[in-house]
Amino acid sequence: MTFSRLVKALCIAALPLAGAGCVDKVAEEEAAAALATPEPNTPAPAAQSPDAAPLPQQVALVEAPVAVAPPIASTSAAIPEAALVASGPLETAPSQVADTSAPASTAAPSHAASGRDQHAWQAGVDVLCEQIGNKLSSVSIEDCVEQQLIFDGGLSVHQRPLVIKEHHPADGSNGDFRVLIMGGMHGDEYSSISILFKWLALFSPDSAEGAFHWRFAPLVNPDGLLDGGQAKRQNANGVDLNRNFPSHDWNDTAARYWQDSTGSNPRRFPGASAASEPEVQWVVKQIEEFHPDVIVSVHAPYHLLDFDGPAEAPAKIGELYLHQLGVYPGSLGNFAGLNRQIPVVTLELPSAGIMPPAEQIDLMWKDLVAWLDREGRKGLTQL
Image (tube, rainbow, N blue to C red; front, side, top):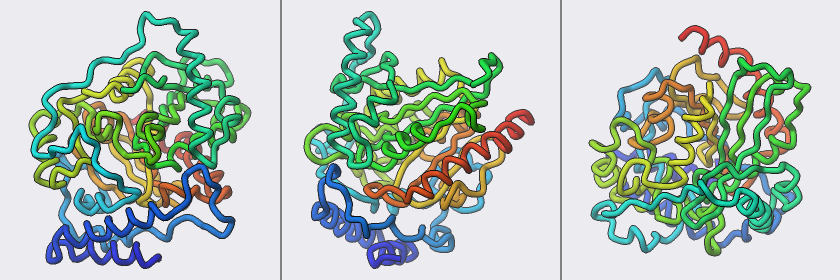
């Protein structure tokens, strides 16, 4: 365990006595360290390795659950949002939410691209690939272009195309098992984007994954990754997309929870209204039109496996062991897992800026496919 992670663990363990200031101090030190590291498109030294082991389960159990939605079957209590704020890299609050006393008063306009020239927007996908390849050291421009990503009708706040890659079942069956898998919901979680491209490269229609209907969305928040020099968690409107989904409790609890439980932290700003953001509207549309049987969402850097909704949760995916965090107002797990009863598997990678070793990338993919084939199908047939 690195010194920074050890201090963070001790702060979380002592949170009822030490207060959130201890965690905030660690967050400031992590932010300073992040600024001292190479730019994302600079390859990491060969000696670098992923972050240390996850926080011990007994540390996370100190606090009571903070989930506002009804509790779910879980092996552990939810980690307090105040503790989760201490992840990096951190950045200066955007001007749109500089006044953190209350959510903004106006919602983002709709950025749907219906009626526009699809060919023109598809050409924008090549530009997006160039931007991704120039930003991420683990994904080249060629890696992105080779996947032949498709513009699927949605645009970010700053008019970048929201793209997918679809793999149909190898046998061409109509009664297919559908998996929606997403990365880059938070723009500063680089590894969550890169690993989807690695898994796309590993994809083999002749292997077990060829039996499923897949829809990959490798970068849900392109503005968060690509705007300016330093990536940020939120979208271009300063909204945390994973607090903006229209869960049943959003109207009653999202703003109050943001103010009371996060101290109006701009990194957790839920938006002016539920599904106010074009990127969230697009994901909701994907769920409504694709009808996934399982949703997989990749994040970083908590080094664990989370799960919400029906079916039996996987015990582990690669080096990520099950540790259910609970849900928050406007989170995907709340909206899709609890409200819509779609199993949501959330992979929290060990580091936001450093990719897992190649053998772990491969093992995570194989474990995920094996669970989908075994427990995923079985759990859903029992609903």
